Image (cartoon, rainbow, N blue to C red; front, side, top):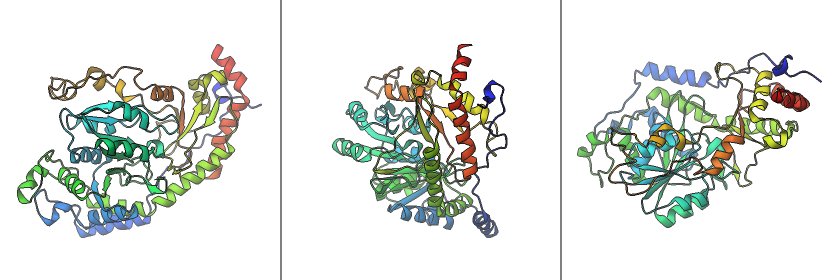
Length: 438
């Protein structure tokens, strides 16, 4: 039996894993075309044909929308900006509530706060880590204006059930698809199942343009309002007809021509990159050694997962070893990844701390010194951001293990090294138990 690196043995691997770098000749060629044109942006923040941006921006929006069978696409400079614009377009404002996930990147929550609305946290479905329809239903009040659904890790939420609830109560549904490009739910692409869907082109996503994002919708009015908020709405409304000034205080959320051009080239290869993730993860799962207490988190039969991250369920009481010790043992066997030095091996415990435990929500203050939006005189509800309000998310955060060993840059030999690390841990469980008792 080979001694664990954590206990003084040699690691399985020391060579860095290859970088998740898929910028190629097509992107370089497109960048030089745009540079040679001299047009790096063509937005004007007034009512004019260039209010909608330049040729690359418009082509990017059209191509992305067409590929998702959506009527409208509005590019933005980040998924965060897209979420803010979508919440604004939905008419959310002071006194309103927005149902959100506590297990997500915080921008999926602060998008509500940005319009002085109050986030209400619903619990997650322990099978897919997305918002639970049952928990959503329990949180709805007469103040609920919108629901932000996050397709976490690339697994689609149960959208039919969520949309049924939203339709009953006339609530706008915004899909956060930052981790789920090319994922499908019952044969339909995510981002088109709610009223608006927001995607990310941040550098560590499936595809990227450095920074960037896009909002998809089949609703012409919502698309128009997102575009207004993206580009200085308050300076534009005097030049055209608009049916409501609500939230028409605009921002500069515009995407440049370079980002749009790179995004077009990236989008053209997105399906093949997601397919490679699925192939790699299937290989990993099929060959994962048996470790006491460790199981592969299931994927619903009616979805196609896009695997931003993969999830392993872990029962420490079954294994007799804490999750932290198990992860330390795996980390000791594996190196970091090129271009991600300082992050450690691509495996960790949980995801993010439940967001309602963040200081903003514990102290209930965001804007000014009056506690808005939480203590805003327009808000008539009662808030509860205490530990225990979402038991499923707290259980998941304390027990699951996430990893990214399915990235398209990884060859089978790379995956075999990761699997060897798991096998080595499986062979040394008794030594780990003894280590914990010392």
